[in-house]
Image 1: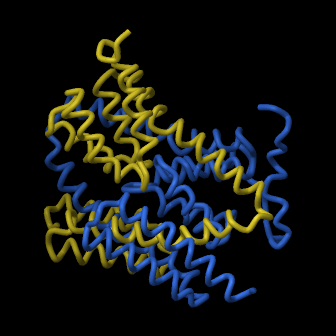
Image 2: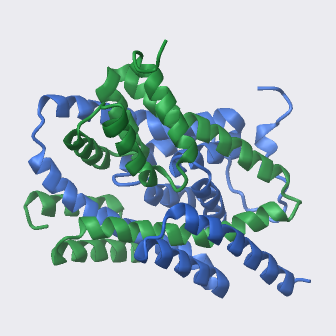
Image 3: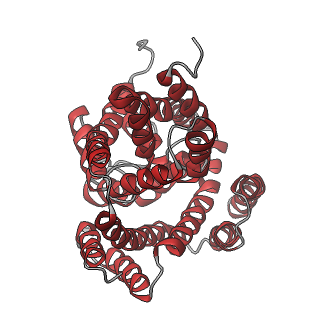
Length: 203
Length: 177
């Protein structure tokens, strides 16, 4: 890596946030992401938010929303993107790699072991019944995260944001319009509305 | 060296390319993975794909690990590594550069605007995929109750969510769901 980017200084310029408590080290990043990953049955987002926002307080709820939203709309696996972006924000490229290795490494070993077991003992009926039960609970956890992520919007009575949120939910979840088309319309629309409302609030 | 004769190269190419178009996360790329692994390359049968999907849901970690399992069944441990790196590497690099760019231009107003505009879309999308998954997983009223119970507990209390997953798994094991 060229010496031009002092990684630790990256988050500093935003002086409005003096309460940044503690900068995680490389090993700490690896460990935190390994933990949330190994706990993450049926999706890591639940655990990522719990660990980053609630336990370590490395980010506020709003910062987490914005970082996750960015990773959500870039191509590729969201949580993997999030791990790299999050790690790099604190410790540069090495931090991104540490978080990525923690997130993907340990569960990869487990998944490969499971695959090897499955190759030998192919009958997974009991496994599948159990999995069905896990899946029901996992969906519930996902909904809980959705509600938690909505809280900042509800708190500042962001009506336009909530309307956009509901519209996307209806278009994709209920009407089942294709993702690409919905995003093609929704992203510019949301951007335009956001710009307009900000302009009205502080001219 | 044609990609068909070298399975590692085929894995790298297939998943590396796929990742760049996988907007909305690994789960929204599942149909495309099925097409590539079953229809195009004949790496897996239909049933094997369904089982691989189940195993990937059962094992901890990001949902993207399904490509690890596909890679493993194609070319063993080397295949598992190749598929995972191909699916995660290019987009992680892209995400790194985009976020660094946004951080640097923090004084400019538009990056913050873009991020703020994406938040409600992102939450709406997740609510929608929750609904879609729920429609396949919640086939009985007990299943629906488990989902609602887990959501309420996880939202309102600080109980470790692992307990809820464990309870769901036990109920499934007992054949209640």
